[in-house]
Image 1 (cartoon, rainbow, N blue to C red):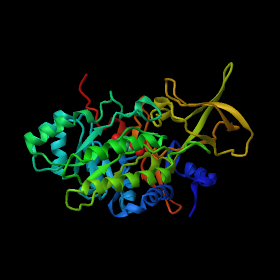
Image 2 (cartoon, rainbow, N blue to C red):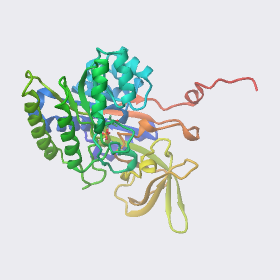
Image 3 (tube, rainbow, N blue to C red):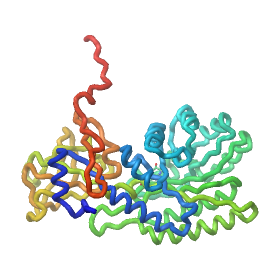
Image 4 (cartoon, helix red, strand yellow):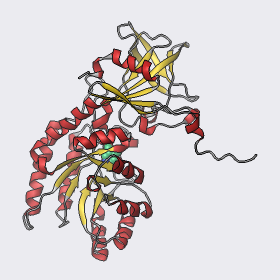
Length: 412
Ligand SMILES: *Cc1c(COP(=O)(O)O)cnc(C)c1O
């Protein structure tokens, strides 16, 4: 099996074959990550589920690949559900955990027959009136501040996500009023969480709350696993985390079943970034080298229209010059071609860059293409998937036809 990671030549070949800017996903890495997580939780194999959070990368082929591996799907919009069904996920393997969507969209999710986690009292009450017989999960806000950036910290006390655990009495009142059946509890506290304690604190809160609900089938602990962005960068310690979580989960199951009939409760995680981030490579070509008073800029044929994480989240993505990997290192600020500040990396030590070189931006599998746009009327890049070392085009580069497709031209 060819390992893209160690093979600049293969990447250059793909850049020549498909042109730049270009996204490449190595399925070998996705499979490895999936198996790593399964292995960490092998002791609860029977009742353990990995639901791929597909907002990280919604290419249909990525979904199909994960479906074949046995994954379930975590979705946040009705469109993601539809893509998931098209990719072959069964209804009962899809969970829909939306935020601030209308009751009408939720009604559509009921029609599609997927599992639903609701995250606010208002919709829960309405849902109970419409569908008293449709079992529902609740997204709990455990009031935990976690995550590397405020934009992706979603479980703190002032967050718009989840129902506060102080509002459990209100949830119970809705159950009494509408006879709705709560069969799952969910939390998701953010992304890039390094601190295992955050997971654990949240999990303990959920296990505690679950004792109060007699019909629980699943506990969904969300995600936020941190992956390394550079050599030696830290990541969530999965084996340590799984040990503690398994212990807490087993204790909970014992407690839960004390007064009730024996019941298999499923533990769910819904990783996005963990599964696909490191599988991705974003290749761009250098258009211009430009010197200013203090800086050498490398200007590339892309920008935050294709890859917004460095600009939006201050995310650090490694950048390598794969055209000249053995060149001597120089300092560059790598910028895009968008007419606005769009810096991929400030003051980076990169092997000497010449105009025309191809740069490779790492960790490009999650929240990269899926957050891209047509700003500056640029086409979105094509995507290539590598399966057992072979490359397959999985999305064509856009054309002017795509840009104008929905424009309605009126006589002016
Ligand atoms: C985004 C999201 C995830 C995935 O988060 P990652 O940090 O990519 O693993 C999981 N669950 C929900 C509800 C989400 O919104």
